[in-house]
Image (cartoon, rainbow, N blue to C red; front, side):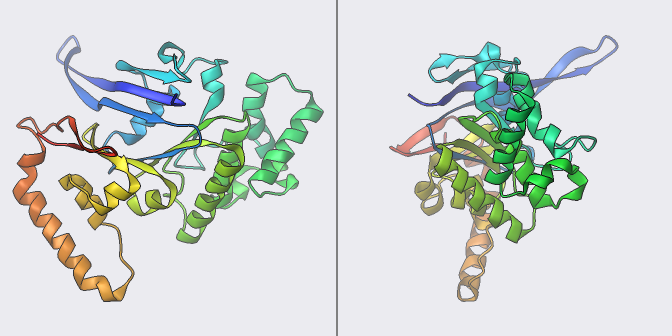
Length: 308
């Protein structure tokens, strides 16, 4: 049984116009996506800005209203409980945000930021709370005195660690990581990513890892889904996506991964040129006349592609 199962999830935003503000059309930010996440697994959700990947994560945790579809957690349909305070689902699924600075209240000390979920869900004594906060700071590699400081006193990587500590406070089973390292320097990115893998092994965490960077996703994830125009264009194992990309959009993302080997510079440039040409000439083969993504079709046991 999957830890989290999402079936035909849709998030549509109405476009209103006219004198009476009637609904004229809808922006289909997420338009019928389905996937599963097993206990301890990292699923990569990849796409460019505006593809709907962040909205998918927000809908799962209750920060965006679900238009249609259902969410199963431990085999139970919890769609109506998504976003409800004090539910078991709200406790078991936490989120790490892209902008670590704006996601932390600048008027609160780290002590109060990390303690907030504890105060919402647990009735701990001040001593127990302090002990738990010290444990969480130790897990993320920060000293106990960091609890008395404010967010602006930390670097970007340290602030992201505070966000991770807050997400870990209630011992969740799934963490939705929305571009957790995109705003960080490359050296700090590596530190945070390796740290996330360490705590995953230590606590058997599952991740929904949302990113636009296929290079980072390759380091973190076993299975990957590629999203474009609110739908999945390709889904499969890491090996099948990287070694045998079938959709033109996936090929474009892979072609954008920098190759630092000077001996392969010419070969990489030829591949990029070929993909760019194919995208221009064969675009209509991958999208219907309304510019919508086709339904996924099975290519192999661990590979699905959106084809006509």
